[in-house]
Length: 229
Image (cartoon, rainbow, N blue to C red; front, top):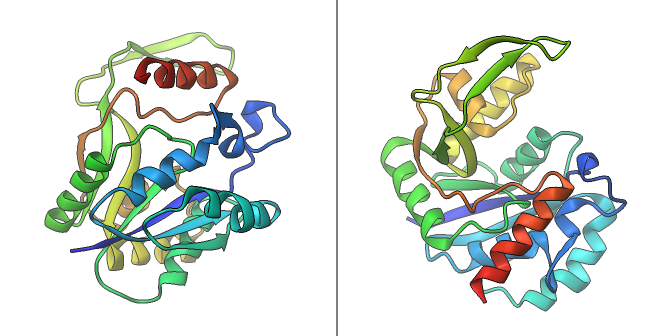
């Protein structure tokens, strides 16, 4: 079964302290988001890509970025919303009512691999929902507003969420509609499905599948690229 992808690139990236949105900062000779686009285009299970960006970046993507990448899969450009959740919902509505799988990915995770995308889709076909993640390895502390430790959190069975997160279309659409109707805001799409009553399978991702959020993350990403050469 072929799947559709929503790649998110509409965020402002305020924690990066850059005038340029983080997804359009360059790693080597490409904007960060280009690496995600190339990975999804290279995934056999992906039939089409919906790229969601801000209105300010639409012309750059349409006239410069996408033509330069020469992707194998068709890309439809959409305008994002105020929140990540709104941007995903814009993509889901653009797809219309359908069956099949949709894989949702943060465009600032440039090192996802086509095989990981394909496995996530395959598991979602079986279970209805699947996401990449990594077991938590560090000791976790719960602190108060003053930064004082209140407790140590047991890390058994704790996983750090990654993307892509893949879902049967009707499930994720209904989960988003339910959240919108009731004013619920989640930090990822899996949380909306959990709230809706769905079960989400987690499969192991990769320590390289980092989300570039802070300036230090750019150095880590550059080191990953350097190690590949």
